Each structure stands twice: as C-alpha cells, then as structure tokens.
Length: 308
Image 1 (cartoon, rainbow, N blue to C red):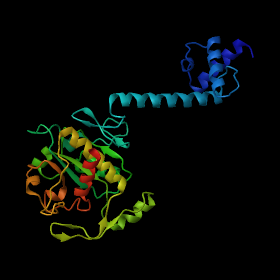
Image 2 (cartoon, rainbow, N blue to C red):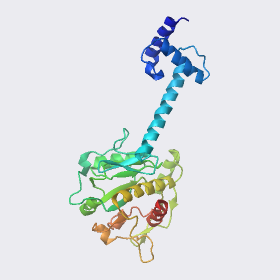
Image 3 (cartoon, rainbow, N blue to C red):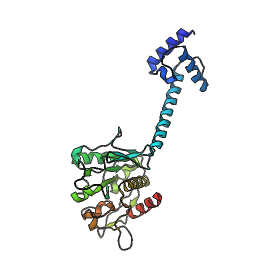
C-alpha cells in the first residue's frame, strides 16, 4: 500500500475510532505519523505497517489509560494525599483509605443546603465526633432518608467500607438533635439496619452475614440481639476518625466509666458540648441507643496505636 493510501486509511480510521495524530506524537496525517505508528506497533509485536487499525487502536487506548493513571498517582503522591481526601473547610484533607467519595466527586452523595446550616454559629472548629448507625440498608438509602427529612450527617460509611461525604465539615449538620452539639460536632453514620431480620438481605446482596450481638447493654438495660458491623466498616471508620482528629486536633478518646471501659449511658459533658473527643449518639440522650453495638473504646485504642 502506498503512502497516500496509508494516509487516507489513517484518516478514515481516526474518524471511525476517535483517535488523533497527537496520540502518537504528531500533529497531522502524514508520512511521519505512519512512521510513529510503525514504531508503536513494533513495541507490541504487531505488524509494523503504519496503519492504526482496531488492534493498534486498542493497545494505544490501554497505554494512554495506564499512563494517565500513573501520572495521576504521581501527582497525588507529590500533593501528599495519595489521591484520597475529604473536604474540610473547603480544602483537601488526606485520609488513609482507598474508598472515599467526597463532595467534589462526580458520584458524590451531597446533601442540599436545606439539610444543614452553612458555617458553625459561634464555633471556630468542631471539637467532637458523634457516631450513629443509620438503621438503613445502605449508604444510598441513608442519603435518601436524610435528604427527605431535611436533616444531615457529614459522612456515611457503606457496607463495603466506602466513605461517602455528604457535606463539608465546616458546616453544621443536623444529626444530634441538640443545637449545641450540632454546632460543635461532626456526624458520622455507619450503615447498619440493626435488626437481625435483615441478615438475609445482606447475604442476598453479596455482603455476607453481619456479626450478631447478643449481650449489648446501654442505659442500664440489655437490648435485643442486633447486627454488628462489617470489619471493613470499622477499618474505614478508624481511617476517617484519624483524619478528622488530626485535622481538628480532636482527642481520639471516648467517655469512659470507672473501670476504664466505654461509658454506656448519657455523658453529661458531651450532651452539653463540653467534651472534646469521639462519642456515640447514646452519650447525648437516653432516647437513643446508637451505636451501642460499636466497641468505641477498643476501636479508638486501635486507631491510636495505628497512628503512632
């Protein structure tokens, strides 16, 4: 095939497949492009005919995708966040977790402004993290419920450990039922339907069975058997807590009883937003039991040890 016919072939191929001469380092469809295509084909043991047909095109697409991914990875390392971050005070905060969807992500579950208050009245930075279970089957259903009810939490951790950020941590979420606590805290939901009758749902969805807890106590009483959390959710939660505590200088501590174990009743300083640390929703009011099925003291101890 002559040079002019090869040029015509490459022009037709580009129109059909959607590639450009720039993919091979050239600006025009000419003899130099044919040579560059031949050199590329030789790297992949293809027939070095200088024609960008379907096989050559597929290999170039793969190479471009790989190069773009590596370039993004190197840029992320240079920026110091390894590409994974949450949004705090309209800026990036690195998090050591590989499944994060922040509010700037195209797939974000971002709550509308009517679900929260912009800014924090009279509070410079949050001093508490309040942990909840959402009594929902997934992060998506949690997001829908919050949006419909016009309330908010800053994060929700899905069954597979994906952390979805739903609002900037600089804004006041409506998650604690207490305006003072809302102003001073960050809300984190762990997706968990709680009731054991939903165990079949998790199996059908391919998540596997959740732990079943039979001896959980809160507010001086034993509650019915309930579902625990997937290990991957706990690991995601620890990564999120470490990132938030480091950024806002919040102690990775929770209210403790006289024996040094997690307090399993209302903690008055927390309910008045006078505590600095990580709490469960039940620490704020007797009307809540979440997240009694989370061993917060043990989880925070592990997080502290990992951070050292």
